[in-house]
Structure formats: C-alpha cells, structure tokens
Image (cartoon, rainbow, N blue to C red):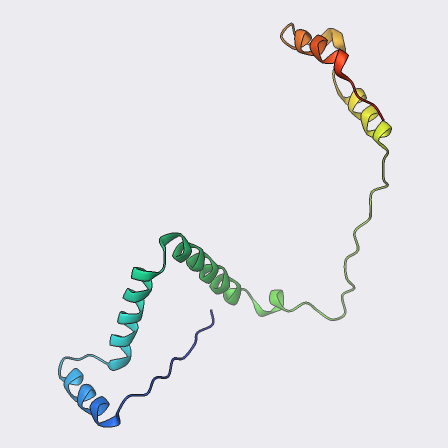
Length: 125
C-alpha cells in the first residue's frame, strides 16, 4: 500500500503550543490529524467508492505479503506462448453442434413444439 505525505504550512509558535497541550492529554498532532482525515473521508466519499478503495488496498497488501520470488519473474524464463486453436468455419461449428446435440428421438415432448415453430424461420447467407 502506498501512502502520500501531506505538508501544510502552520505557524511554528502555534504548533509548539498545540503540541505542549496535546502532550498533557497524551495525544499527538499527527494522530489527531489522521483521525480528522479519516472522518472527513468517511463523510464525503460515497460508501460504494470506499468499498472499492478498501478492496484495492487489501489486494495491494496481500501482494506485498507474497514472497519476493513470486513477485519478480526470473529473467531466464521464456515468455509462455499459447497455442492458437485453428479457426473453424460456421459450417464446421454447426456440424460440431449437431453431433453434440441429442438426436430428435431423444428430445422431450416439451421441446418438440418449439422446434416445429422455429423450422420455418431459418436464415442463410
């Protein structure tokens, strides 16, 4: 997970006084600002966007926890090439479907009327 450091100008004297009184309450300026940013984030960012961001943060943290060897591919390995399947024509695909589908005798009674209706509506090129 990456983080961004925010820098804002603030008068040094005021910061010193703030830190002095926060120490008495066992608080820090950084923690107080972090709490404020989190509350502002939850108030302004829609819930579905926050859910998406959280899922991305979880993915990033799980990838950081993976062993280093799994993250860095070895340079000696050749890229994996996928074999391409030969192209089939429409007729070949239709024949394969016809061979894979059950014979008309096996079809149930419910399927038969739907097939009869569709027989007159074939289209060819």
